[in-house]
Length: 452
Image (tube, rainbow, N blue to C red; front, side, top):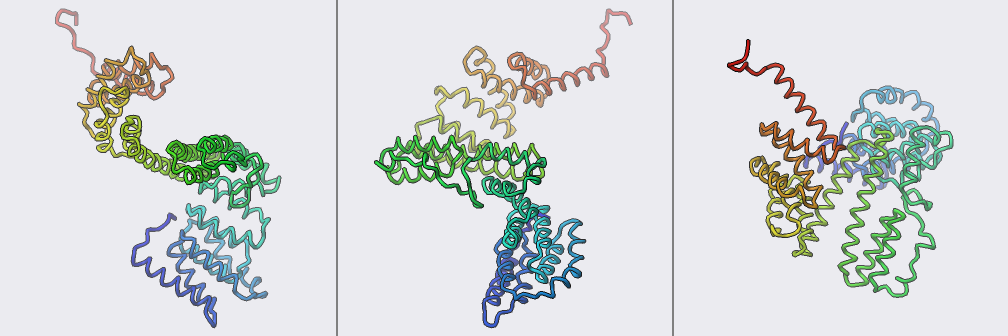
């Protein structure tokens, strides 16, 4: 069950029910049952929105205690646990919410609702139910592990580590939990954090140079780099923002701030990849894709600002073009590349990017000419990486354009230079195999003077 698309009219209807429920649970007299019914309907129709879930749980906290209901609800709630084992659906959540009203303190119901949400990739919704469970019993092992998994899927690694470390030794020693904890501990700050992932700043991270003269940019640069070595990205960013305000937006501090933001995203992607390799269900490909998309979006924003900030720095213009190509905006990338002088030292890299964009825009003839130009002029120059890429992309394009001999020649030349280029080797092997099969199935005709 994925997060549903809510129409504008449905959203207005849900908002009206939510407002009525809030008024009912806070009014005089209060009607907690009606409020629960209204909020349950909001959650069933939009199970991914935490504001509805939190309001529902807040309402349950105000419901007067009913000692005899706990026993009766255990008999009536069996249907929810039975159906919840099947494919998750809004009706399952509705059953769970009715069961929860009968016994708001039942941790099994809260954990089962959270499990249903986790199965449906509703990470933030699962977190709401689990935080309620931990409010009731802070050391509940199932709730602790589930909330750690939920936070992991949201890439909130510091908070997740806090909960993983709350597990008993018996739980923490099991694989893959043990491997996840070791991965997080090796990639995150070692200082103690609380459940929000905020760590107390140690004495050695107090910077007397900045306190003495907060207008010196070099002091912020040195301190920020020190924090980055400790993976304390957020503190480094906050420190540089403070430095920008104190120094009048020093350009070097601004560049460093942008670089650190990008580095922090790359570091989180690195952690996510490691966790995905350890146990993919704990951090799925969707979370990894979201992180990569966020990095691409941030890179594009940063390079757009830098291209405007430094209009004569053609390296900034090139980086912006690369970002535009990576986000599939090929025409704008080509336009950006055309603004860079052809006699600039970046000309080989600009030509390679131009060929890639032309190829994506199906301008195959122009792209082939671009790659041919690079292959003819770069073999004996220092741009070895660009030359190799020209051979690779040109070889693939040649094969697609029906020139297998040139494709095999270029890929063979690439493998002579870079034997570990596995994708090129796989493609070349496939081409050779297809060529051999074609000769076997269609042997050449005998020459006029040969014996038949």
